[in-house]
Amino acid sequence: MYLYDKANYIAIPSTNKIATELYECVLVNPLNGKLAYPQVKKGDEKLNTNKYIDLIKDNPNKEVYLFSSEDQVVVDTHIDNIHIISSDQLYSWVKEKIEENSFLIPEGIVKWYKLIHSSEK
Image (tube, rainbow, N blue to C red; front, side, top):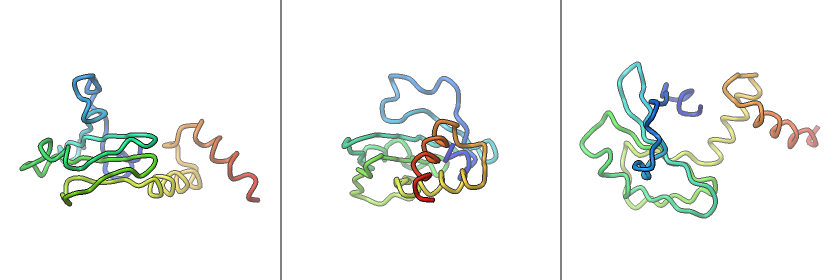
């Protein structure tokens, strides 16, 4: 939902396969044809930007988005088409969307967010 809201990406059906361990699925921006390859990891598992260079090299219409719940992303070389989404960025986006009463955030996340923040009032 984050990539849809921020960059107009939508999922291409049937691109989430065992053979695509490097990324979760393929997303497409229907407005400009760009492709995105997101990868999400939780816990202490590290992501390394170097593993994604061959996937996008020499193609400005391909992008990689990396997210680690523990912000475990290793950046040896900066590459313009590889984007790292931090947990703070994602949390801020969720908070903004919930406060706007946006329909992008799943109901379960809204409930947890409200439960956690109900004690702050």
